[in-house]
Length: 474
Image 1: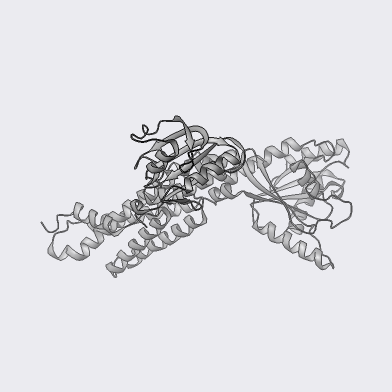
Image 2: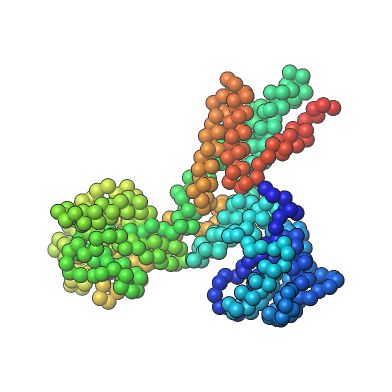
C-alpha cells in the first residue's frame, strides 16, 4: 500500500446525489488543512477538532461566497480514514454542491475520490478490517430491518474479532511448532509444547466446522431469501404473486401457460428480505417456448430456499379425508426433484363451499408429514393474514435472528476461506507424526486463509510470539 503520508488529498460528496436539505462533502489527506483554510478564509489557527463551526464557504480563486454551512476538522489519526480530514456540511442543492466540489478541485494537491477510496484508506490505516468494511457496505445497502441489524453487528467488528481471536491462537500454535523444529535439540523448549498445540488445533478445527454449519443464514439475510411460487398451470400462482405484491406484477389469465418466464419481485416480509419468483406452470408441453419456461421454473425451484406449491382447490377430491393423500401425491408429481424440506402448500378456496373449506381445514390439521398448508381466498383475501404469519416464521427460521448467538457468515468469500482453513488444519493432523514441517505448513496455510478474510496477517507477528514465549538467544 502507498503510505498514507504520501497519498493524494481526495474529496467527494459523501451524502449521496440529489436534492436534500444538507449535503456532506468530505476531504481526506495531507492537504486537508490547506483546503479548510482556503475555503473558509482561515489564516492561522485551525478550528477545534470535531467541533462544528458555522462559516461562509468561499471559492479560493474568486473569493465568491458559495454557501454558508458547518465545517468540521478531524486531525489524524482520529478520523474515519486515519488521515487529516475535513467535512463541509452545506445546503444540498445541486448548484451548491457542484460549486463547492469545483472549488475544492482548484486547491493544489486535491483530486476527486474514486469509488470506495475513503473506506479503502480507513482499511489501510487499520481503522477497519475487511469484515468491517463489508459490514459498512451492507449497512449502506440494507433495505430491511433484519439486514440493518446484521450489517451493524458486522460493522461493529464482532465477526472480525472472532476471526482475529482464531488467528491469534493459530499464530501461537505456529510459533510453538516452528520453535520446536528449530530449537528442540538444544533443549531450549519446555516439555508438552506440541501436545498443547495438538489440543489447540483440534479445538479450533471444531470451532471452524461449527461456524460453517450455519445453513447460509447470514448470506440469505444479506442477499434475500429465494421464495419460488410453483405449481401446475392455472393453479393461481400469478394471482398469489399479485396479492403479495399488492400490484399487478404478473399477467393473470384463464388461458393455461400464460406465464412463460420467471417474474421476480423483492418484498420485505416482517423485516426480512425476500426475492419472490412466479414461474411457469409445470406440465409437459410441445411448445418450445413453454418448455424453456418449465425448465427455468424447475431450475428456480431447485435453487429456492422456500417453495410455495399452489394448488387449484377444484382438483381436490370431494371427500375431504382423501385431500391429504391427494396433496402428498400432487407434491411428488409436480415437484419430483424437490430436495428442500422448506415447502408450503397454498390452496385457493374461492370455488369451494364454506362448509367444505372448514372441514378441509380441520382434516388437514390432523395430518402429519405434510408441509404447512394455507387456505386462501383470492377474492376476499381470507386466510391471507394467517399465510403471511406462516411465511414470516419460515423466512425468519431460514435467516435466523441477526442479534442472537455468534455472528454468522455473510459473504461467500468468508465461507471459501474458512473451508480452506479447515482443510489446512486437517493437514496439520495428517502430518503431525510423519513430518512436522509439513504439519507446520498446514497451520501457516490456515492462518493465511483467516488473514485473507480480515486482511491482516504478517510474519513479524509470528516472530514476536516466538521471542515473547521462549527465552531463545538469552
